[in-house]
Image 1 (spheres, rainbow, N blue to C red):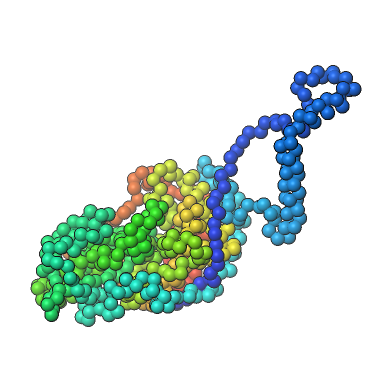
Image 2: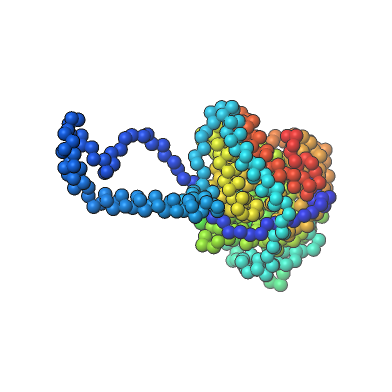
Length: 536
């Protein structure tokens, strides 16, 4: 539903510093008798040794004790004293001085059956009650402090030198003219980094290159090319149907000229990352990102010059992209500034999108966070998948999140890169309320449409119409509407993953109790009980 019909609130916790320790690996060793250096028993001494020879035997063994062993013994006594002293001094505070970090976990045993998973879940029941109580206590939060536009611009001056403050009037898409000074015959896409990673985009560039000069605008002896930004952004979440929605939107004649669904430019590639685990590679300049929308720009240019038979309709063409990382992924800052003790990202992706395009349309597709996490696990984990393994990973992730939120702000834990990297599953991506409230700090509620995947699957036609109305595009013909509704679903669960079956009921119950406080606040914000997912 559109946020224009909702009550808006923005509660954000105060920033805190946070660091996460790595998980310890415990080894199990068998027990065996050990002879200490103070054991004076001689294996060669007969059992009936005369007692009068015992003192001499003790003296002989004491001489065998080396200086190293004596020092070791004294160090052991000292260490024991320190432990006891720490126990006494820290009794009323945090426990032993050498108590492991609260962010460290003991290796969890993998349940081998539903009953074992249920028993494991019961062991965590007390902790879950504590977690729910802590989360519920963070309902009243101070709003996120939005950075000044000046500070946003200073972080990427080139971006704001390329994109103007105002766009061309009379055109629905955010477009402008950029001077094109390259010599004739020079390939305008020769340096585009997206062509190295996308065969489909490389193919499109071959088409665009062939008639590129025909779409240039000539004025005062100079050549100009039309540049456009996306009119709308489908920003998330992963495994919530964004791929299917994007491809169905392309069946509309006013939206069809889109090339790449997920460029991940605002969150990763502009910083030089494709996958964070692969490290820094090469920054994708904004010019490369704008090239992704050249197919639409060329068609719009034909409408401007009147070369198109439907030139009026060409002026109404819109572009969009659907990077499912845009809503939540701001990890690049922690990789770019590893030495800074930032508890939360200083800037978010929406700060930059809003600064260059304050009228952008934002679409968010969500689903039951419990089912989202299981789908995420099945899709991104390539081997050794099972309901047992998923239960173990969920348990570890909930414990890690609980350790964090018991000491830090909820917002800090949701965005924390170290915590995210240490959790075996992406539990934090289902805390939708934190991300949505942060988007509402820069965009008006009328600019954001929030949908449920469950509604989309149950009533596709009605949900798509809601999206078209939000984007202000014309109605479809009967033929186009039939093609849209009959199109097979995109990016569905693989056969081998379906064969694994559902998650354990105990796992589902654990995740339900974890997400319930967040879903409750989300449902209140959107004034829609469907976002409670209580009947899923």
